[in-house]
Amino acid sequence: MMKLARLAWVRVRGLIHGRFLDAAVFVVSVVVAGLMILIRPLLWIRVARFGGFLSARIGHLAANPDVYLRSREAGVERGDTVDFFYVSPQGVANEQLLKMWRRSGLIRLMSTRFGESLTQVLGTVPGGGHHIFSTHPTGSSALLPGRKKYLFFNSEEIKRGEDFLRKMGIPVNAAIVCAHQRDSVYLKHHGQKDLNRHDHRDSSIMDYVPMMQELARQGHWVIRMGSEVAERLPDLGGQVIDYAGGWRSDFMDIFLLWKCKFFVGSNSGLSAVNIIWRKPVVLVNYIPFQARDIYAWPAGSIFVPKKLWSLKERRHLTVEEMAKLDVDVHYRGDFYGDRGLEVRNNSPQEILEAAMEMDERLAGRVDEDRTDSERQDKFWREFGDERLYGVYGMRISRRFLEENSS
Image (tube, rainbow, N blue to C red):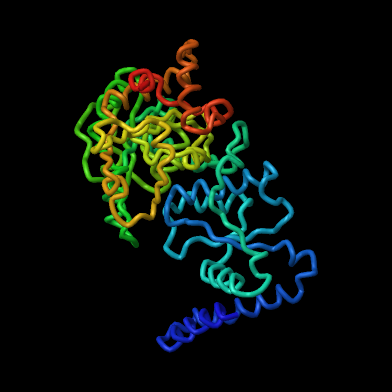
């Protein structure tokens, strides 16, 4: 009850400063939570649960509801509860995604202010935790191939998207590849709430240029995705479009990812959106490279991790050493630099080869021999989770593995 008292004091201080609505919502939350605990023996109260989605980041807004639904479908998450959700008070990263989740009818959304207050109160009273659940992805529990899609575009939205493609000069039936690289401008623009450094995940769009040019030469239309970006893309010809340079919108972000043949990018929020469309992706410059993170991507994806160079021992870390690094994403400082490790980006050639492999696999043109399979088996065995390859069809880029077998 001390937690509840502290929470009440916070609201009282808010009331003193004129935040009357917050205080009123808190009082209602206390009343509702109290009634829930008192009449919990009733079945319809016993199965009610509440949780919040991390909607301020597009990857969480796409993946978290999807994994939650797949967990229920797979029987990992309880299927007999009535769950209510609220979106982050920090905002919504993509309004089109939220609109589609509302329209699906599979997610019950409630007021953010009331939902956050109610879960805070429930978390402070005996028995209240029974009515709270986490909406974070929980590993492989729901990432099974062949599951249905939960979101859809209606006919009006499809027409709207196709009209916009024509406006950009892209034929409606074109083979589209979306590409995105992470840089630090997005966080700088929106404000970073902590001192965590994630610049080890950054790379340059210029390293993608050979890949874009080759895909365009083969007849694809390549769309450079992104919101706020550090580097503009040079003019690479009509079939390579810098969509981040003035075309982008919340709607078209999601439509292009739905429409594209495949996606090439680093492990950022935008690449995580592809899980809702069940499309394998090409993850380049991937870091940190750990099993619990790789389960967050669609089955059949291709990975090219960044390499880690030990400054003290003058060598690259092995797969096993990389996998065993206990990376703290909330580390306040330079996690790798403070451990004497230099992060080395993928080369333009490595990015090109991984994208070409995905294109060939989707077209059924890859003739994987015994040596290739043995290399993959060995890699994932040393990585520590053979299911990723054997069950989910995750692969390290064939050429990358061949050239870095040591």
